[in-house]
Image (cartoon, rainbow, N blue to C red; front, side, top):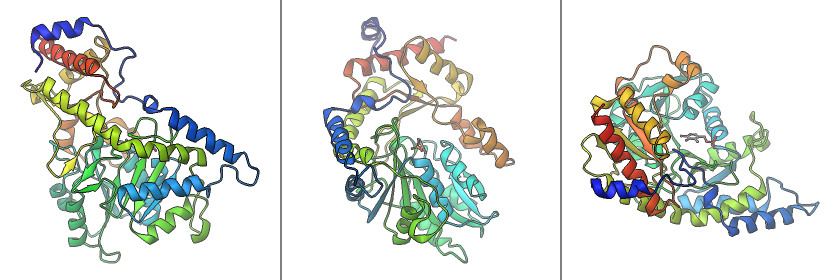
Length: 401
Ligand SMILES: *Cc1c(COP(=O)(O)O)cnc(C)c1O
């Protein structure tokens, strides 16, 4: 931990400029390579017989490189992760009384996708140390109506996919066989799990390439990875009005320019993750030993991508005191901090009404304790020190409040 004298020196330097947001945007990771790739893709598209078309070679190449990176047979490029989650839900052809288990501590996209097809959202509890959907809790919630387990690789760390796959096999649906295991990888591109990349394990996984995520295709984009030929064929068809399978679809395609830039970003991804991990591990050193704060945990079988640096305040500081801490960090120190995420049903009225009657005590209590301290691959040692010193300063003040 940084001692008091050193802390004063660090804080004297003043707020970082530009200030770090809680979830910083990725534009800062772009270089001339991305600019050149985009310009060159535009030049190719200027040929009237080529255009920006969805079968452009850049898209084929990006999909191939992505599949190879993750280690899956297929990758299907789409315009955003959300529509990918929707597609996979439609693929399941769920009946209104059929159930999908999703973590309560989550972004709203996964439960909204289940709602979108009119099926039942069943909330699962998380492991309070990893923030991932807890297989032991999931097992208790499986019923004859369960069709899928829908973990989210929260905040850059892998969900325990092998445990879910094992549950899926052991509790098959009577008609459809093993439950589907679907991963929302939006925040976890480039992370690892048991010697594989996140996005490999599970029946199908969906990535976001939005401007906030670990890599981005000009601000929006997504990718679906799977080893399953049928899922691949379905997603490829419905991403453009149903195509060859003649299923219901709309347009969810990526452009050739985005894909060209995506291929460049993908080559840099391991470097970005290494940089994130370096900032995170240095921060562990700067912060360790604060009794009121629990630092992020990385299980031995995972390589955390540190999309977010997720901490917990002690139980006594849950709620109001945590909120004060986050506010102080942002407003007084300019050290970005977010709460990502409380249970979805607490924030989103639509989801709350849809899942009325379900309450998840553990997720609710963790939702009052967690907070994420800004982290970004190009964050300097000075800014990392400043952010850590700010957090310690805030904790000291809160002790006296
Ligand atoms: C960002 C995010 C999404 C949505 O990604 P888009 O590409 O913006 O559609 C879905 N799930 C999680 C967990 C996210 O963080």
